[in-house]
Every structure is written in C-alpha cells, then in structure tokens.
Length: 63
Image (cartoon, rainbow, N blue to C red; front, side):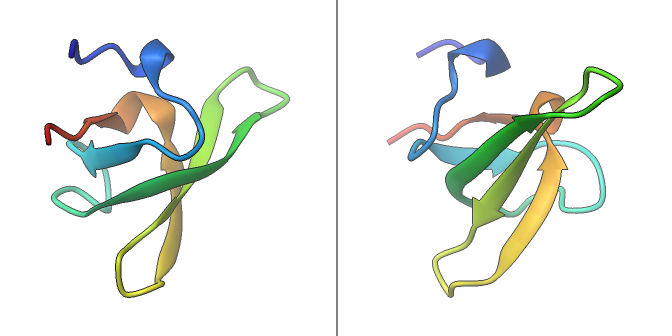
C-alpha cells in the first residue's frame, strides 16, 4: 500500500507521523474539510481515546 493520504478512508488503520500526536495510531473516523481547505480527521485509538489531526499527518498502517 502506498503512503498517499488521499487513499485513506473512514475505518482505515493509520499511524500519525507528524504533529502533536506523532507516534500514535488508531482507526480513522469523521473526515472533514475545513473552511480553509485543510482535511481533518478524528482518530480513535484502541483504548477508545479520540483525537483530531490533519490528514497530511497520517499514513496507512501496514498490517
């Protein structure tokens, strides 16, 4: 699988590679485009913690 963030969709497993949440991983939920054009996502971790990050900061997690 390539690391293009445009290929990610709701329900995919991802790994955060940049930003405040770097190193965390989880399942993508709630993909939104802000007024400024940035794509944001909510990531739900395995322990049910949630955080929001920019789509450009995540890549698909390799199985």
